[in-house]
Length: 161
View (cartoon, rainbow, N blue to C red):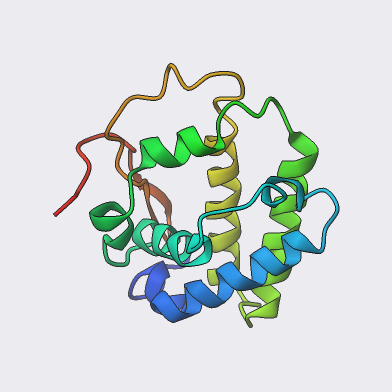
């Protein structure tokens, strides 16, 4: 078995700049896809892509920018909850993410496979509350991800500061 690359997934993905480029590429792909565009038809936060890149960055070993100034995992889960089951949308979003990886030049493993696995697991987390937010506790931390996969549960206090 080969060892994980040195450094964080965040660093390998190009840090804040690389993840912002990925967020832009994914969003563009989603808007061009009839299925994946649906969640964006009702508007988003004005800094949606910057917030998304910060969230991804924190999860992938970067600074805690998202949780220190934007929100926590509980808020993210609630934002994605109560939309019913949507397997075809999830599949379209993942296909758009994979295409976006290529768009920004992430074409080789282990980085590509790690980011694909991270996004696929995130889709499962976001889809875990199709009907209600009642079972989403307050103060969940942004789940952490490394080359080996999830590293910490999304529990614990919010890291505001």
